[in-house]
Image (cartoon, rainbow, N blue to C red):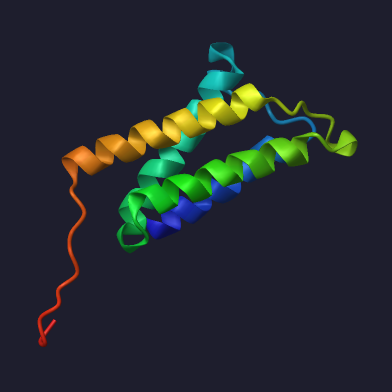
Length: 116
């Protein structure tokens, strides 16, 4: 899961910061859908790949990544739009997926036994 997370993260950041990203089949659903899909995927992979980090820490860090992406998109040379609505969509997707994973996959407690 960790490898998939890192590959998805690299893909998402590159696509978000390309001045002219390639056309994708999902473009017809709109920009917010793309943000929700990307950050839902990242949240799921991160929560499963880094269970010791804690789900809310994962959510916090991914939300911060969404902010960083929006800030980099405000750089004129990139020729993209910085939109707080995109960050809100990112964060809502992250929190929703994190909460769902928390319900269906309760966090395992570390083994404190001497043999563990």
